[in-house]
Image (cartoon, rainbow, N blue to C red; front, side):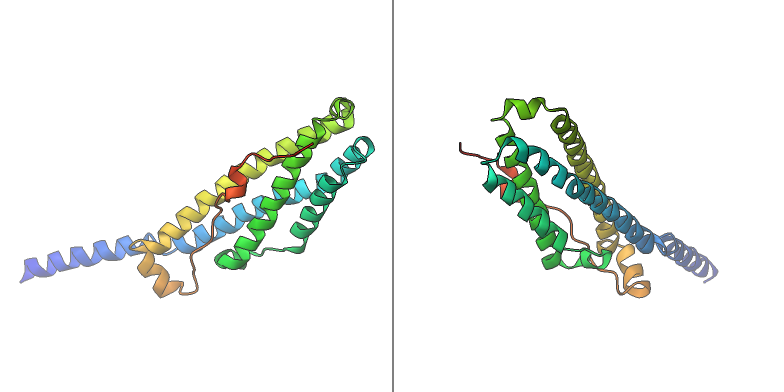
Length: 196
C-alpha cells in the first residue's frame, strides 16, 4: 500500500509539474503574436508612406499611365481604411479582408514597376532610384515580418491545440482563440502582367 501511495504521489507531481510549465505559455505566446503583428503593420505603414512620393515621381515621367497610378492610389486608400487590432487576428473574415487589401496594393505596385520599365529617364532618376530602393527594402522587411508573424502564430496555435497546453488554456484562459495567419492568394503567386 505504501509503495502504491509513493507511485501515485510521483505520478501526481509529474502531472502537476508538466502543467505548471505551461501555465504562462498561452499569454506569453499571445503577446509574441501581438508584437510580431505590430511589426507587420509597421512595415505596411512604411510602404504606404512611400507610395505618395513614388507616385509623384512617376507622374512627372509617365503622364499617360493614369490607370496604373490610379490603381496604386486606390489600393493604398483601401489599405488605409482597414485598421487591424490584435483582437481581430482571431476573426477569419476581417483578417481575409485585410490580407486582400494588402495583396491588391502589392499587385498594383508590381504593375507600377513594370510600367516604369518603359521610361528609361525615370529609371535613371536619382529620386526614383532612391524610392525604388526604399520600396524594395520595405517589401523585404514585410516578408520578414510576415514570416516572423507566421512563426509566432504557429507556436501560439500549437499551444492551444496540443496537450497539456490545451487543458491549461481551457481552464485558465478560456478566451484564448486560434489566430489567423497569412496565406498566399492565387493572385500573389502569378507574375503581374501589364500590356503596352
